[in-house]
Length: 470
Image (cartoon, rainbow, N blue to C red):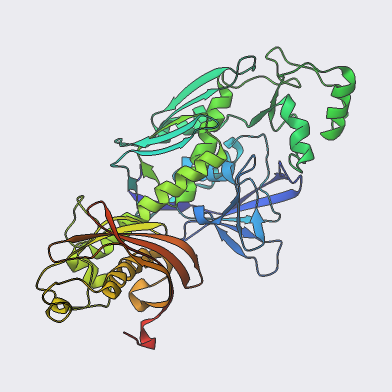
């Protein structure tokens, strides 16, 4: 992988129709500054709005990856993203005159050839690389999908597709060991594909309006009489007589590689992984994947990346035993003794869940006056501890979290199950139920050992620190 960020040397364009919309579109690739990332720009709309190519902007994965912001969308971005990521371009602006990039020949190669012809510029600033140090697994039982990322000294992919008995494809394997050397000659030319039995279903679903025999491989997986063949040709706008190649592909199409379909799966995976926003150093092992599974994997990677970024920002003494110690917590939360109720954060999945602990000592000031002969931690402070742990969970939901405070606005379903006494350790688990525009709802539970001590649903609002508060 390259050490520094890079962009392209000059502007360049390519035109064609979109696979699913069938709309004409001109894609213009423009150099972008350091830290810009990859953004698609709808030049056909007023104000030329931008859509960053990031995982949180994915809005649909039906036979392709669609990104959007509000009602604004760009369909089938994976081949463009694969070309950009395969050439290790960090910053680029993709200007479109329509809502779907051109499909061209169904592969990433035309984009790769255009981008390489525009040249590259080293931008002199280091690129961020997400180095995988623990195995990350996505499994989908129903379709037998497995995506696993394991540590590696470089980015690698091993991919298997395994179709049911009787399929013209059967089982295929491929591996990419060196992105810089192998992507362009061995993977970028691999074209998108589908089965004949899928074509009418896809068309009925409003897809493949731009599907042609020269921009996709259609594998014959069932017998068709002439009447059905004629109907299919009308759907695809094909006027000439259609033949079947010796390889069982509709039209006079020949494979570019014996295992071209599985190689294209790698292209799609590389494009979808680009939605993480940074390249990864790890080995992806994939079986029977697709865009939906790819996106779920990237979401998992994104959560881990956010956790690491937060830990790097607040935890000054690096550790792999926990996420935040008390010093880091004091940088995050505004509370101080005697009202700081969190000692350590053990686990954190930003925007999803957090696990923290509170060590309950006899020296806690509330024991002096709260049943001093039979010391019990006040239930309201147990709930306060849950709220403070929940505050850590909201770190990455707002820009500039150091300038924010979290206020309770409501409590519901509060129950106390057992007393908390000196010497106990509270294990506090918080899950985010809802978050939108600074308003959130969380579900919390506090345990002593394996026993539930308290639980509650908490409503809170994130406000600016300058508004004041306690």
